[in-house]
Image 1 (cartoon, one colour):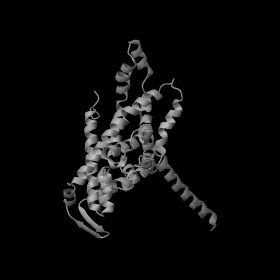
Image 2 (tube, helix red, strand yellow):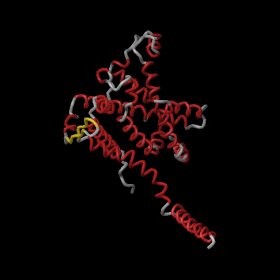
Image 3 (cartoon, helix red, strand yellow):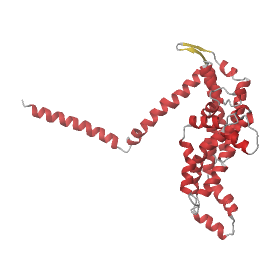
Image 4 (tube, helix red, strand yellow):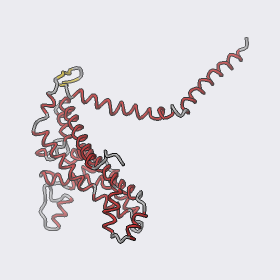
Length: 315
């Protein structure tokens, strides 16, 4: 018997298998699931599993691999201490000031950069966005040296030129908070400008033309047309600002060169989590801090979304 018919039969079988898989991938029903598979796997492995593990660890005392003891709500009871409440207060103040600065200021810049008559607007768009591409550690180190306590540091040298005495910036609660908010503003101003620019470019020009015919001035156009039309963008920026403010860690770590700051003036919730979980080798308490932070941020965001009318059904 010739081997040729067997080879042809084998090739036909392989061709049928190949066509079968082609039909699966090309099928309109199967294709969406195929393309979603990488995201679903990434979500399960890198997000859902760590969340579940952290929640379980928050009820345990972990002394090392294999040495784990279930202690119930003891870690959550240990959260009620002055260090944790101070971290919440510091983080809340930081988040508040970043929201106060990083919503109206980028909106104002975006309005100017959206004008076609503005000279060099493409240059300024790029210039404002460049800090977002800078490493937060590099930026933090620069700010730490620029706001140093010596008379020869950059900021103190400028102050001395105007007859103002040098300031110990990172040793006082108020000035340290100012430096942290300034660093955040420098890094994220350009990103928020991009968000607002995308919203401004979706507003029809006919609205402004109709307002001009009715005699509206620049301020009235801004307040009664621009701001209402940008409401979804403002809600989005506010939501991510709340999350970004409460999850701040790298900026504080870089400014104070460690998770510990003098007098805990720069200790945020995440830096406190880092101290307890890694420096003090108390992963159970660190997990409880993480769960508490998650609950706090979710509660604040749900409240602000509810107050902004995000959950209202359109008529």
